Length: 499
Image (tube, rainbow, N blue to C red; front, side, top):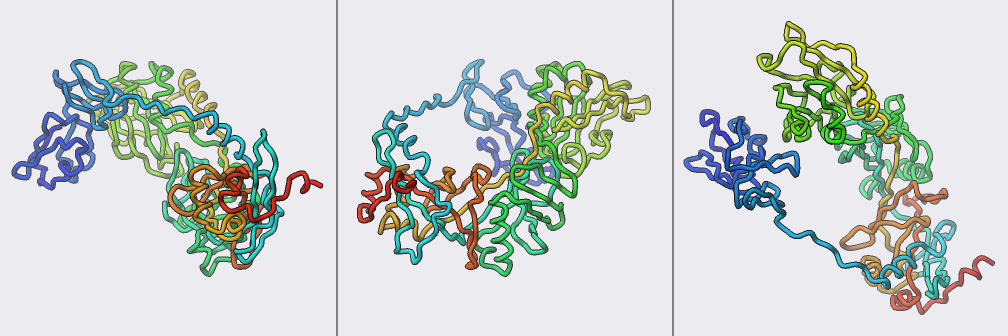
């Protein structure tokens, strides 16, 4: 890396954050040792922009092309990720490929046999207090193995949901409060690939002043009914599980197939020859073709053009959320060019501007005044847009219910709740909700998540505690059931229940 000593204050940011400990401070000035691979992290973090990437690759360096960082590695050293080491003229993995041992047929058979419940908890009712067994413990024979399911409709105050909204459109800032009928019911949480996420409920809101409205809302969501939310400082949302979201009154039809940088990689050969530069706008990661690895493979050289956003790694820029192209703040494609060096460009230069859902495309051309203007989009550029559009996914609303279970269902299996918890975590018992297998979170307790859209029936109700009433099933072999203490209770055969 290059250092501008006039700008450097010796703050030590580069030394503290270097993944390879390749920076040493001497007299408060950084020295980059042979370990340095020019990964650009220190350049991105430097508060005074005193560090820059060397213009040329030295003769004793090899560029790693296994990720967008493009580490420049000397012989005997690893890249920043420490997955590859240079040995002579080759980059080789630093560790062998790990191949897990195959499961035994007994393990596979056991997993399949108890993978789905004998009956569901829907309509089972509830028994209280907790020391009274759960309403039903039912057994059937599967492949000569006796399988038992114990069920209850459990009132759970430890209830929450994550609502997933597939869209590139901005709905509100992370942590922004989310309201239903004017009352806070959750907040915007971490965004995921192509989707916005909202957290609803949780014990602290479930015991707060809006608890009744919140509980009713979650039951309606879980039962696949339409619902409205308002993000403070953001969008109004009309949502229903399994349907496209309506954001500020406009239906969102599709979500991006990938981020802007990833689309460049997938569409690389199609982009060659269409323009001198390509920008794919994305609120998350905008792609700049000439700087990218795939662009270099296609024979491009950096053009000095920069898109809006913050530089991440070559060809990748972190974008900003907005209502424009690709969910960015760019409303006019000319503004996709945030900066450029006019001395490095030439009249007639063409820049193709796309965005991640393939709904828009523009071609820009540099005129004699060194200004970019819109021109007609050639057919080959339209074909790329259409390819992106055809590979988009439908924009849908989905939801994960998360609950914390205890109480009567466990008492229906064992007098020692810890025994059931351990059996769940080691795979001897399977937990399901409304017939759908749940994911039990690691660690202590029985905290679980389930995909609401897979539950076939209107499965949820509520009680004024308030709590959501959740149909829970625990399924295991009879041997495990007896080991946990179930031998004290008579089992009902499925055939008898059907009669």
